[in-house]
Image 1: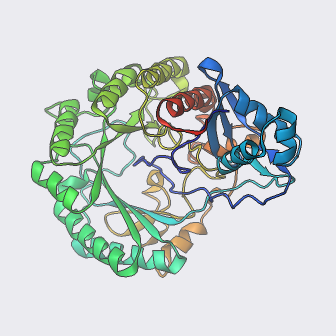
Image 2: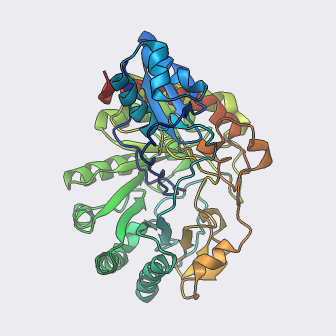
Image 3: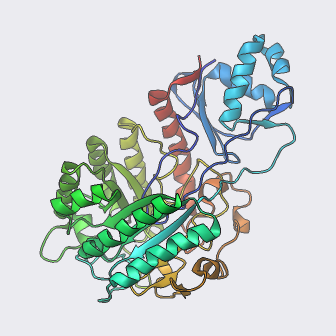
Length: 463
């Protein structure tokens, strides 16, 4: 038998626009002597007789050759490893080892167990909008466009309150996303806030993850060096290498693409590892393959965020109004990935809000573990709702106030029979399933690519 597993149960990490950190619950030790049963799986054929299996209810993914697949299929009817071994004339040791690996991969469960193993949320996510001023005039930007800047006292209060909220709600990790406008226009404030955050993280034993989301125009070598010292990751927005980037992300008097590429050079020269945040629109989709080819050649991680209409809609950018063009561009981009499969997983952090590594009933942390903090200390439940704050950082418990707003609590009824429901959870709640057709067209290809990637990089668990 030949069974290939991911190198880690939780795969990937991305600084995308709506990430919701969650982790799969580690499988308990397999009870000895009990009947086991195969978990319902989505299956994709690969070359040379291999198959990708993905179990939506556990988030488990593995690649099996035909012998391993035959062994797994014996458990469609509940039985013990010894009974399976007898059916296929395997030794007790072979059957035991295979069952352990299939159990750890989430492909087997105790007979009669049918509950979905939802991921646990162990982190508090906070966007910190340091300014509403920006160097670009992006057509699809949702952020308010005023001259408001966060004052130092407000920024430090926000950091203090976030750590207090994390302790109050029992969170062991905090994700800080410094944003704007263009946050590097307020780098001095960022440095002050991050310095305090590092002090509080050490004092309270809280794991801190920090990222600045920038268009790159204000990045200098000294800022990049300071970001590395402060342990702040760099998320760089870049939608293409062609005219689409310049059209939808215009830089007055210059080229936003050239500015972003210059920022990449500066960041890497200072030892940073930039992550590309790519917004996919109908306008940029045709050039997406070229951008991903560049990213893979440069060894850059990236995330594809689907365009979300704002209060000022742009029909020329809308994905659903130009679905054939968009799908052609996305399929071409996935074909580029197949030609240069990356060492990092494709299942969490590549395609919009999809996360195949852990089943979830909500696409993001809105209304649960997610705060968006504006320049004046106002708190919203989503970036798309920044002009509709529901609290402030000085409230007794702003997270509790957000949880009391009308936020999604479970999958929509129309998702109930969909095999992909635990990977996308219906997509962005702001859009109410608007990207469903795109997800369904791309998810099978994504699982196929992950299977090919596992075959290329992962060591076999059973040989």
